[in-house]
Length: 547
Image (tube, rainbow, N blue to C red):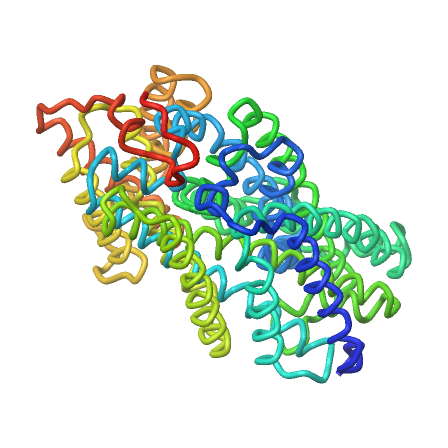
């Protein structure tokens, strides 16, 4: 064991300091009578600073550090860049679509409400259930990280770390919901930035400064030393790029912030969050790269030990304490967002729309929201205690979201998309993803070529959507069509060796083809003005304006 360990008392003191401080912060905003719209989206009135900080803190979770460091350790120089840059760009990418969602439904709390107004219950529940699944997995990942950290740096057990994080996060999120999540995100982000700025150079100088690292270049393979490594692009960059796009559109923690920020602040909020995220994550990924350059082996072959190991081997106890707060802060800021997201989905999508049929009782609604948080925390803690393999779970949710991206965006811009088209597209995309990902059919001959062509369509869809977001419909269609043809040329006979990337792209391709095909077969047109009338604020204090 070459990990530095705190005494049980020290670790408990650090945790009490962190969660106690966070809890006291939320007491500042606690109201005698909390209202439902504030509990879910702060009455759509969050300013620029809080909004940007909250978006950044939510997007950076425990997996970002460990993932970025592993990426640096595995792929060398370009690893952290692929991890941080694409994640950051996706925050920027949500913004044009986010503006459209806001315009259609200024009073929305969840994306599901917007889809419910557009298509009805089945599409809304597909979106809501995928979100709840995603948030539970995210909670589990964050609690698992807490367990791992506590068990590595103290005599306490893995389970103790999981339970403390669960109880801690629940304690301060339960009363004020989303408002608490945003306010504490700001404090957590400030702490994370301060620590990242201190820890990264500290590790570097403890290793002997820049000279040692330039000597360490000789340890890298030519592929790891190459900034434009194809290996890193195909195994890390591209699949991550595709998955994060799905995450951006399909995830309630993101759309919740989108509906909460003041309309005129959406653009600067997203641009600032993009830069903040990229800087912190790429920086922390560099610790993995330093580990590679000094020839360090992760303990027990577990990549998740890289950062704790580097920190505990080379830094003083004070820094290790700071690092401990950094990780707890990053996982808590994401876990509280997941709790707020799930409570909003159950409050608005399940109860508000489907049980109370748009006439909910606000008191009962708040009770349901809080109950959801308690149940979700319990499930997250129980799942985390089994310490399952996280990546397999994430892959599955990524696919589900990948299949949702095109139908959701198309539903908000194109008046011909029908409920049948939406539902069938998501199901078809998911089924084909599973066939490719788990190789249920042999990847040879005509089947392989068909799958590669469908993946090429998916690649065209991803690039076309990005172009469409920033440059409008015509450019989007041209970029999408050209990309699909170019990708088809490169993919045939080549992509079948990269199962993960192929399967993810297929989820996009198949759902897009099915969605467009079925929509063109129907002649009905949808009037977008109806959405604003159907999506309401739930609190009687503010009468909903008729659009």
